[in-house]
Image (cartoon, rainbow, N blue to C red; front, top):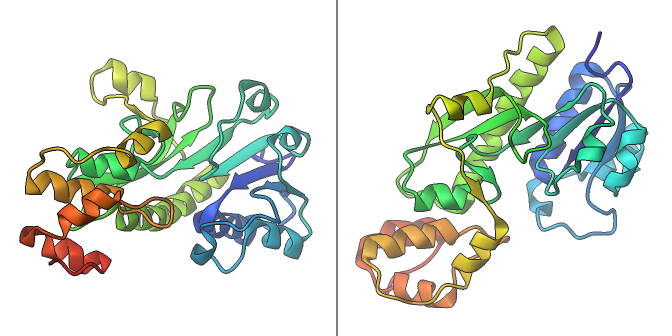
Length: 267
């Protein structure tokens, strides 16, 4: 039986979601897509530069019902596909999708559950990053992994560049996983088992952590710490480094390469 025998609901935001829904339509046609959930039609999205078409425009073009509230989605299908959807699906909504669902998470799991993983990966000094497709579950980003892909973190990486690269790798991963779902060749990998066996560590990052970083004060830090913090908080238009950090960064010659990367001219 097809994973979307009674229709699938697609939920997402940003350019990556647009590319993924178009791949679903390209491989399966528009008929299986019974509804699309996305941002308000009237909203001026901050990610508008990432895509030439918003999800609601794709819905209108293909005659697919467009939803702006999660309360409506369970009436439209029995399989849920989520790509950069910013809200948590409540347990009672997930329970109504008889065939379950999948989520594309732009970070490695279970090490980077939650939000703004790219910032924390840079602060942690990770040499590699990644993207994951997993089954949806009641636990945030806790479902079985059905696809993952890792790539190196570049020396001068910022939150902006790492996030952009994660979306590009994420699209490639989504396409592979989707085709494997269609032919039945996916092999789920339990996050709980990986954690229990000590093979991976579960960590959760919240939006509050980013707010605290952006509101941090100027205390004694080494040039290396300043550089790392700057790169980790450079993620426009969503967030940018606080003023004190910009001023401190411009005084250190050792980060000229970072300044050149993001358009700053060190003093």
